[in-house]
Length: 453
Image (cartoon, rainbow, N blue to C red; front, side, top):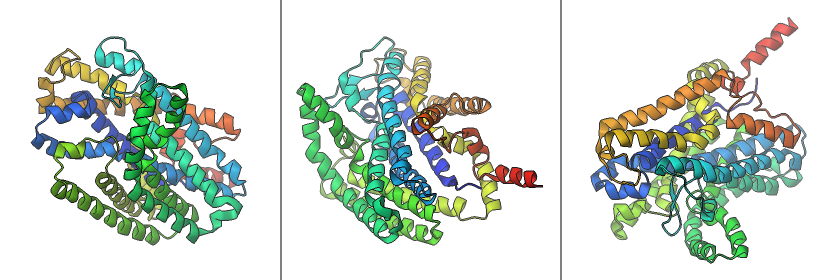
């Protein structure tokens, strides 16, 4: 039996299903989030606020990155593998995802807005969105999305693991927990002023057009490149590391519940209090609260708190069970775990897919002219429901077809092949289909027993 943590794939699956909904709505139906805030009345924005919040839940992937990296490296150290060698896997994964971030921005990214309001399009999805070939600008590579956030969180957590676990530091359990917790809390408190301090320089230096400053700002992007950066998601990665260490050590589930519930409630309460201060004391309007270059503290704290509470429930529901119960749970959750296992593939192509369907639906129910930013489709609830339903049906059918090939044509399979060659070690994720249908390795146990018999 293997040590795969079931709820991680479910968490990824929920995350990517949320991305499909939020991106289809904000970039497909309303074309941009900014346009949605302009077109929709305030009552509709309040009604749609769960979707707007959902698009900011991408931090879930930063938390998962930290969890998986800590869990994987700890297990390798337990097997006697040298720390530097054990860290090679997470480092290579981060490099590959960063390369994917750059390729994605050039090819399949949805329309985006530059730091000075420029309308930007990728080469392939942009052609669909506009109806004609588009130009690619340097600024495209200085903006960020989930791939960037996952990659830089991978670099950050790999560095933290090296820093903490040198000289058998992985055995200093209490010290590591305290450092990661204090780091996370301080990060969550200070990230917003730190971002606000550096962001104007990031923008100013980029637009100065100096080759040297292009290099400087490219590295600054890690912290100040917009929404999906280490401010605030470094804290999400550090907290994920705490869970990864606990699972690798087989810590009591009661410890995880206590941490998740107490810290989660504190964060949710803090987020609500900060929102009330912004709204009632600072007199910010709803539009002002939802227009930001970087995730505001009230939303960061609230999101992370609800994530921890949800993780606590998932651990209780999926991990704190007998083996027999977990086998049944694994079978019942195949439909959502497949989205988790193939999250990179779905995210890489989903903007192109929803752009194609959006053009069709706008042409039928609204205005076929892609430059029109307000049409009847945006206010037709039945057409919107049909559009969202079509997106989900497409992806369920696509993943079903990919399953017939054992996922050999997925981004994940390509990553496993490249990563295995670079590490010169076969990845534990080599058989993605086997991970989906038998995540707990039960079939391997049965085969072993039959061979002995």
